[in-house]
Length: 182
Image (cartoon, rainbow, N blue to C red; front, side):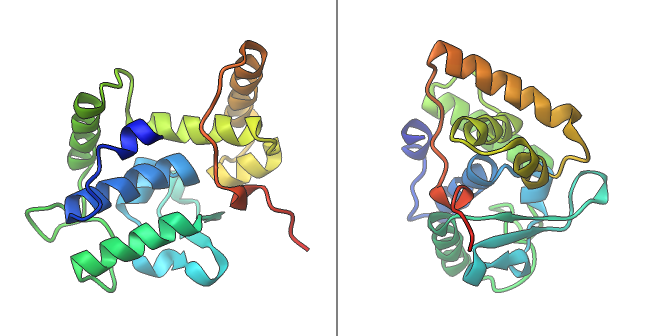
């Protein structure tokens, strides 16, 4: 998403923080609540895994996280000087990032990028649709998104089929989601 990425100054705490937040939703399919409550201890960089413990309906799950995003979080951690606890904080205080602060991030991104339809959950939809269009299967997507059954997950299948029929390009996900394990 070059248009969005150009909005982030990754040399600043704010820029790298917002870059990480956006890409956790776009490249891992996380919900805003999951991003806001993510802790450093939930990352498993050796295996490219991300453990989600605070999720909708208190379900936990494991998903994959690409190297570029682990590197960005590491850069943020270095700038922020934090080693434990919740990863993302407000810029003025030490409190975890609030729901309103996250909404403000997206409001600012919308204005700066010129993208008229942009909100946090839309990035999760983009992840799901891209996953299916790149050849991912419905069961894996259900697990990656933390859905209990196929009711919601099937909506993405329909959307991906429409995009395919119309030849609409989608965001390319990291190959980590499509590698075949031994």
